[in-house]
Image 1 (cartoon, rainbow, N blue to C red):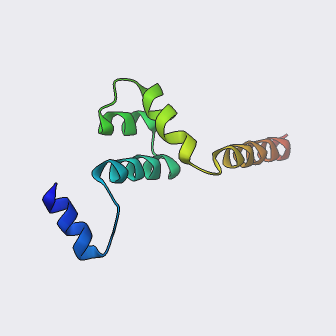
Image 2 (image 1 turned 135 degrees about the horizontal axis):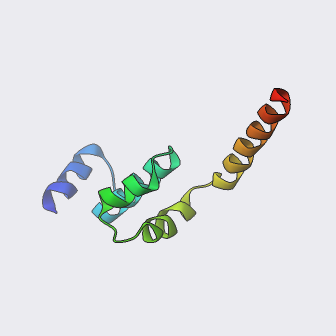
Amino acid sequence: MRTFRGICQEAGIEGLTIHGLRHFFAAFLLAFGENPKVVQEILGHASISLTLDTYSKVLPGLKERAVEKLRGFLSLSRHEN
């Protein structure tokens, strides 16, 4: 723990905890499209629902991106017929 604090101090980062770093890491992976099952396994969670319940709610724009993907799919489907 002292090593982590020392690294943060040298980098000029205040208030970051190992738990906060873990939270950022998981949210970052999910935000950039990593498979939730992979994130679950990396974090060592017993269930994928714990991973998703904990980290997906902190990601702004998830609903909007899902709607945009659906719009794109529907647009492609119309052009193919």
